[in-house]
Image 1 (cartoon, rainbow, N blue to C red):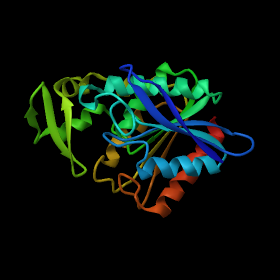
Image 2 (cartoon, rainbow, N blue to C red):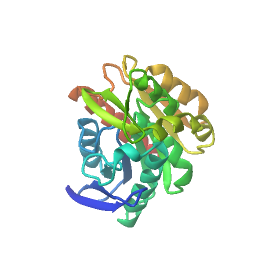
Image 3 (cartoon, one colour):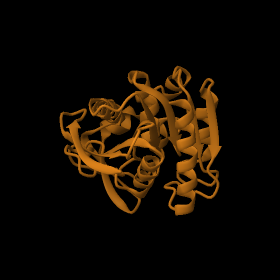
Image 4 (cartoon, rainbow, N blue to C red):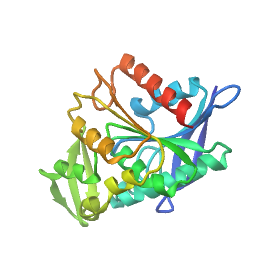
Length: 249
């Protein structure tokens, strides 16, 4: 097994950074991972999934959205639409490396962006969401105590960090028809959600599942928090995801 750094242009033209995991021997398929809001490709949720799926025989690309992690650009000028286009760019980069068609797995807001991006990605054969909201508008609750900042920006505190986003980001949240995208997905969809998720309630995952057509699946990830912090639960998650992709890719 090996990893290699990968860069490619994102939605704003900024260079995005990724890590490509390639298993030894025959590759079962390829998987693109999309991290959560304000997170990065290096958060344990992504690294554990990438390594576990690599061990299961999949080539895996995890990457940073514009302005986050090792990627260039200004996060506080981006919107969900930029994240969707970043995902399209990442899928193209994965194909350019010779790995495709592929599966798409998005965590939290990365899951919402994945569902919105999938209709644009003909190389994606199967989609998995992990702790995803049923609409990007779910994020609006984070802005109840938001602070107005200079340059048309808003400051919020999330995960113990102060984050700035644009007013445009907030204004755009309810403009995405995620339910319509799910209904028209026309590809296998697995919804994974922890019953005790305190960040994105399980009812959000249930709404995604209800909007989807067959073939679809729902897996309650019992014992998990929003970031799947427990290693034993993360191992179970890898097993569920790898089995799904082995069947649907």
